Length: 293
Image (cartoon, rainbow, N blue to C red):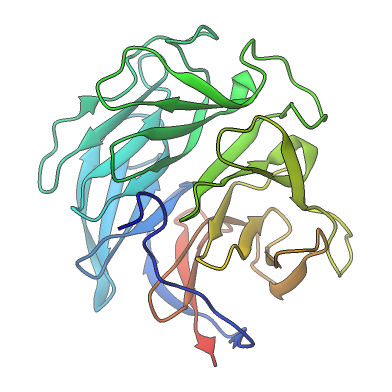
């Protein structure tokens, strides 16, 4: 079994219905979403100070899966363990085993730019060995923390936290994903690009930049992305679009548009339906865009 992507999702030649269905509401100022193995969708909510859980079969109400101030990044593994990045009390990533509300520190709780510190941790990804990849946004790098480690290792960007737009640099990365081959994909937000790092390489290759519709680039406030098993990338950007990038071209295609107020978190289910967090209203909502083969 792969220690990276296990989604077995690979849409090809299909489209997505532009008429969405609202599957959850009353989120209030969140950033990221994720699906668990029990047909629930989880969403970060700052106003509710935690993670809310909705059933996709009955989304009229929610339970509070986790309580924490200033949550941001969200990842759910196959055992329904919730991983959450937060700036609460410093800067850390914590994990919550299924059906528990007590967080276990993965990275510690110190803000800074040393190897045992984070600053503005955003998107996160966890492989099946328990390695946690963190978009250490304010430090302009991607940190990998092995299970039970006290220090992180910089796998993309400058370990000294210097920003830039070169092949060895990042600028406020907001999300990170790993594919089944171990390639690291980084949503390099302030550089308005997606960078791909081959296993054991710190040299980034731009695999997503301009798009085939006006405005002709990703918005600088792009929060999240999803990478499928065919290395197709889906970016939720601040222009209220989902932009798809296929291997071999940095030019994206707008596959969903008109998300009023801009999209934030994004994920995809096994039926290839896309879910986007909509930040347009005070209560927030999650929109489902059905896949059309």
